[in-house]
Image 1 (spheres, rainbow over the protein chains, first blue to last red):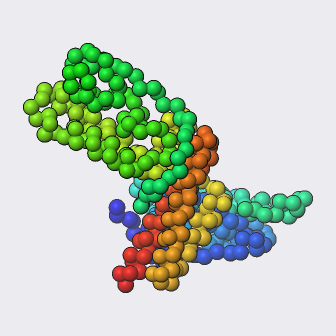
Image 2 (tube, rainbow over the protein chains, first blue to last red):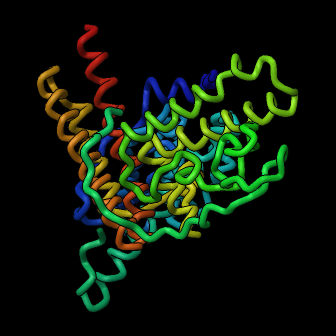
Image 3 (cartoon, rainbow over the protein chains, first blue to last red):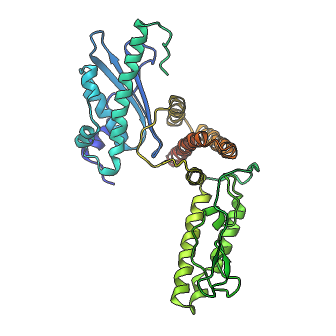
Length: 138
Length: 218
């Protein structure tokens, strides 16, 4: 299958590969998988005190489209509020990368990863101000 | 994937329709639904509506004796060889081809540890689609797989990769044992989870092997 130039660019020069400490302050971690291809995707966000995503990192073991989708999402979410980032749709990712129909699920995985990271961050910060018993997110 | 041929003997209680007796299309005599040929007139029969285990003359369950599976399959296929039907009617030619196709399908499904698990779940009325694009978020499985894939990516030499391959293969064998126990105890929910795990473990082995090939080629 022929990959688009944008997929190849993100695949060959992935942005923001790596990770933050899961327990670090302001870090939300999303870990999702696609059993159909045996893909694993970890996407992390670092959120500032005023609720802006300052930085994002990812690590993906999967095909070129899965790597490109997660790389693109880490670029997109930087500077966004959590609510803005939560609105990213897989269709926008698929369109930007010109993913063929058989690879649409890679963009779904990236959308689910950012949503999971936001949920993890909210759970973490919510529990800090709450009763403090629910600190381990994973 | 190298398949383990030694598997624990466990019985299981998947409900499989009892082999019905139907009548031969040619002589109208009684013939078992799984029979390839009528025992009265010898005419080849069309493939009946039976499960893959019955079709290949094996008991239902996750533990399949792969030698017996091969013996059954190749034995049946020999009897269906097109040369044997060169002089037969077009109806018999068509039936023999349909039988061969049905046997292929049954064999490919039962031979593959993952397809076999998915098939048993389907028979049990709890189908799981291992090829759906649905996302999973099982943190234990995903964290473990992430770490193992990282170890493969970071392995320094062929020996290290070889050890990781051996480890992953042992996990595949262990997962198949767990699947067998789950099916034997009718724990389909657990079996479905184990099937997803098996899918990831097989991917892990594949990933490690291709890394080894690339390493050795340098």
